[in-house]
Amino acid sequence: MEITPLHEDNARSEELIREGWARRQSRDAPRAEGPHVSKIVNDWVVTAGLAKPWSGGSGDNFDLESMSRMTMGFIWEDLVGDYIAAYFHRVTQIPVVMDGIHGTIDAIDTQNNVVEEYKATWRGEERAIQDGIRWWTQIKAYCLMVRTKEARLRVLHLCPVPRIRTYKLKFSDQELAENWLAIRNHWDYMTKKVSP
Image (tube, rainbow, N blue to C red):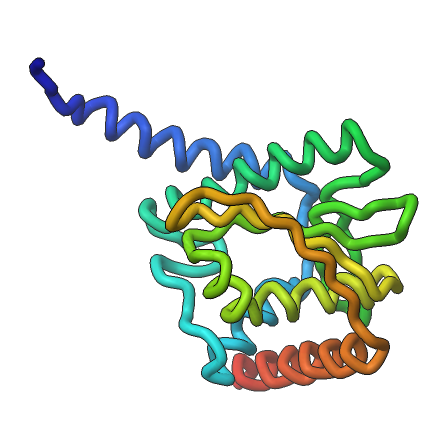
């Protein structure tokens, strides 16, 4: 058997990943001007030392390796979102805003008023759940923004063996209020940090 790497095809694959990201951004619900929950949460957990910064860039400026890894998440989100919207009573990619802070919820179960979030991770089940502060903070914010205490998290764990797990989350009013206060306070901190 003879195996020959096709370097020109690899370069084209890289172009396709970049083009795919651009198409996805133009297809998704446009993000409104102003702060987004995910940006605030990421900055907060990194500033507080609760999580490491994402490697490979941030915002819209990710390197190719990071885009390739995160593409798995987009594929998962599209697959699950399309299936769930088609077979259950779900509305997908819902833009929400509260106190001038924006969010984009993956889906809402409209019959039961439950927030749905879809995540793909290279971490195993236990580590992903233990280290999931970004997820929990974001999901709690979305619950408060649409006035529910319940969420479902559908996770594709890619390592060590691919597994799909669904988690039911229920939060107290106090948890949601404290989480939102932390997000608001951190947004205030971020704007002061940037201001001259």
